[in-house]
Image 1 (spheres, rainbow, N blue to C red):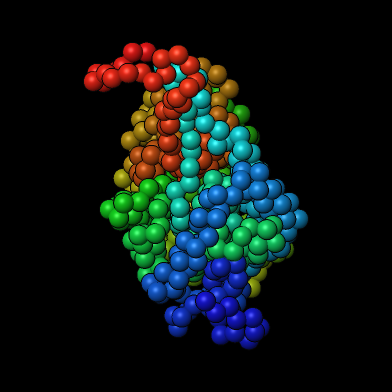
Image 2 (spheres, helix red, strand yellow):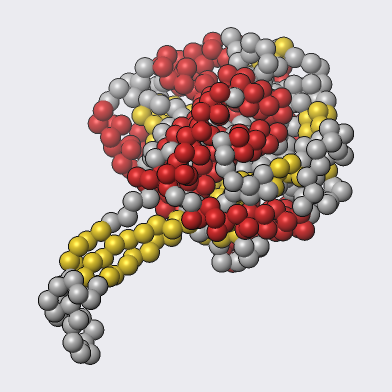
Length: 508
């Protein structure tokens, strides 16, 4: 495999295979933009199926040795990686802001959340402990093992170019698996910075690899015989496709899909707290979060005063270049910005009240940036597209409900079940909600209830395909296979040879 080092190599953002940058053989490239200016900031290699085969081959060559590496050695690499990532947070955050557009503080927060999973993975000697039962039968011991799968693929989205890969990669590597990461081609540079940190941490060549590409690369990973498992995060239609395709090819799959997250505000709630939360969770990262609050369910009579407080807070938001002191940056591409903006017309046409129009919002940034300010709808009803669709942008819709039961029914009737929140001062109502709501992650007076690293992230219904959630103990189980050993040693005690017995369950 050729690894050019010339600074004038034809590919600006290469793949990473066998511990080094690699241009690949495909001549196809994609453009990477600075969303705050609209300018092309670079090109990225788009892998062919043959390129994917080469990268998977590099991972496969590393598999046997890394599988045999001691838990102590793996943990040492994880600890070094964790320290390097912490030291280089600013550089990774700057790369995210330059290609995604989110503000620097948000990008640094993303790296921090990924860092927490790396810290969790540092405990791999404890996490991979099996069970042991001495003398389960006469002189017979039974114990369990967890062993790596082999090469695994991680396919991550544009909205969290560092955090989402870090949900999966440290745990997969700690469990003894080589990884092939296919990041979004829209903001690929963070993955290369992370690859260099893995190499500096002492990870053997080929254990972590990056292949850039589009559907051709994804399809080859889903079909490749040497790829044993796939972790995916993206929209629900694509998650369903990834799950069905990869499982059809015999792979273990966890595919996290889309969301329509509801925030229920009861009449007894602290409306200042709720208004702050709605703005933070609705417009942070320009709404490009699978855990963003996009539907605020106001149980009457709180809608009018709550909307008033939200409008006050929206007026103080500064939208602009994420490298400046702004609250919200641009959207990822012009096409995505235009798609999100089209929902504003669709909502008005359907009869919703457009309280704040983000297209009229003042912008602190270049004219060519992919801008859309925060938008607020009132009197949204469940049949409107602004309610049914995952808009994935800075659009907050207020749905009015007459009672707690009506609000709960609305949430449970939705096809998605990723995250939800309830704002109330009534402990009984909160406890009832967390029990009755059909959603995988629930916040009580917490608008974005992303679990900490030692729990697991994942939704219900059309928000998750597969049985395993991300990171935490679910992540360890996903990236390993369980094996149970039943053992008896001759000479260990009287009667250990057993004699002849044709019964299924000999003398205990």
